[in-house]
Each structure stands twice: as structure tokens, then as C-alpha cells.
Image (tube, rainbow, N blue to C red; front, side, top):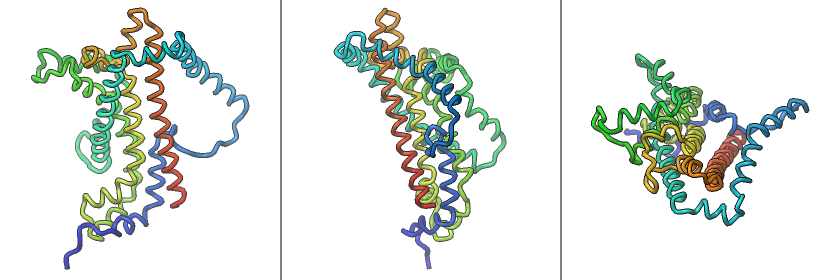
Length: 301
């Protein structure tokens, strides 16, 4: 008798033995910023030092930026943000960042899978190479990409002053976010769960889709969201290869720099606040999904 390749009860039957282990791995995979948990006892002096440091480094600069953006009132702020060139820069930034995040979700997950599940020569070198964009100055990445994909490209691929060039540059600097978010989950996942699903007749794709992917989903979402938020404010990696063409390849960070150079700090501050709002909203959505995921894990434990 032939066993069906996909049965409705495969995922549930296979996931039951390792649900707790998968839940632990999923929770650990989330960056600390997105993990839930109750507050412990905090020493008053320690809390005061933390609040003071955050105020000096984060809150006060953000407050000063916001005040500057509203120097001409709400009308001036809205006019600066909705200026045609500013809107074009914001749209280009959001569009390219979304594409980069989706690419990193797919290829970052694939890379994490290969690094965890496969053994090959040079694995440690590649694993270390993943973190290079974190340590490398992004302007160096822009120079390298320009020499490779710019005019007189040695490989015959010219992406200079195109949106494809922006995508390649941003994909380079944001790749580690997804890989490093997914890797810990794959390490913690109980392989017996997959073997159980296979023994019930599930093929490789069904096992991945019904058993492994639900466990990876929270870390994939958090990694992709962080990649998007990082790409939103990127400047160094796109400053050369992007071309800074208004309404075409000019991103918001380049527009802000341009406004400062022509002595329009209010316009620069207004667009900066808009970028800040987009990034903050992205982090809030990630925090919401992480909290919901942890609640489901706690109920199922």
C-alpha cells in the first residue's frame, strides 16, 4: 500500500514529541529586544544610571531632532516631508528596503540551513564571513561594489546609478540579520520530530513546510524586520554605487545629506523624523509578533 506524501495529521503527530524543544529554540532565537519576560528587581542606582545614559545617548538627540523638524510648525513639517523630491526619496528607500528584506528572508534562511545542516570544507570560514558586514565600514562596501559593478566592470555587469545597485549594496549590509536570527533555532530544533514526520509519509518539502517552518517563522520575521529597519537608514554602502539621482536612485539618507549641504536643516530634520517613525513602527510590529509568539509557546508548553 502506498503511503500518501502529505497527510493532515503529519505535522501535529510529528510536532508533538519536540514541541517544547522547538519552542525553547524559537524563543532563544529572538534578539533580546524582542523577547518577552517579566521585570526583576532593579537597584535604584542602576536604573538611574541606565535612564541617564539612554537619555544622553538616545532620548535627548531624538527630542532635539523632533523639535528642529517642527521649527516652522506642523505645516512646515508636512510640507518638507511631502515635497515631491522628498516623497520620491522616501518611496525609493521603502521599496528597495522591502525588496532587500524579502531577498534576505529567502537566502538568509537558506544560508543558515546550509551552515547548520551540512558539513563541507571551509564551513567555519563562511560562517565567519557572514559577520563581515557588521565589522566592515559600509563606505568600504560601496567602494568595492562600485569597482565591481560600476563603469568598466571587470565582470561586464554595470549596476552603478540603478536601483539594482542599491539592492545589491543593501543586501550586503543586512544579510547577517536573518542568518544570525535563524541559525540558533535550527541548532535547537529536535531532529527526531522531522524523522517522525518522514516515518508518517511526509516528503522533505512537506516536513519543512509543516514541521520546521512554523518553528523558524518567528526568527525569520524578526531577522527580516531588522534587515528592513537597517536598510531604511543606510547611507555608506549606497553613497557611491547609488548615484544619488533625484526621483530615481536617491534614498532618504542621501536626500537628508543634500538638504544639510544646501543649508535646509529643517527639511533634513523633518525627513529624518519620518525615517525614525518608519523604523520605530517596524520595531513595534516585530515586538508585537514576538510577544504573541511567546504567549502561544507558553500556552502550548
